[in-house]
Image (tube, one colour):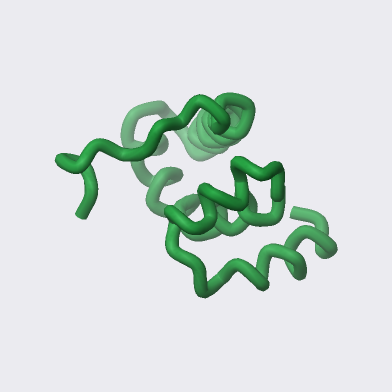
Length: 84
């Protein structure tokens, strides 16, 4: 992530994922960067468990993030049964 985005994303650190989602829906890329940083390690492990190799897992994760960002406007929230 470029240094400028990294510094801007630091301002979102204290926010919940739900709060970040509101900012993301308003087009704030830095909020999306915060979500990515927060969950990347766990999601990478999941992807690596499904596909063969770290490089392929990284590509899967990058593609997933790109698709998520493109479709974020239609996201209606998590179902109650999936919330922790």
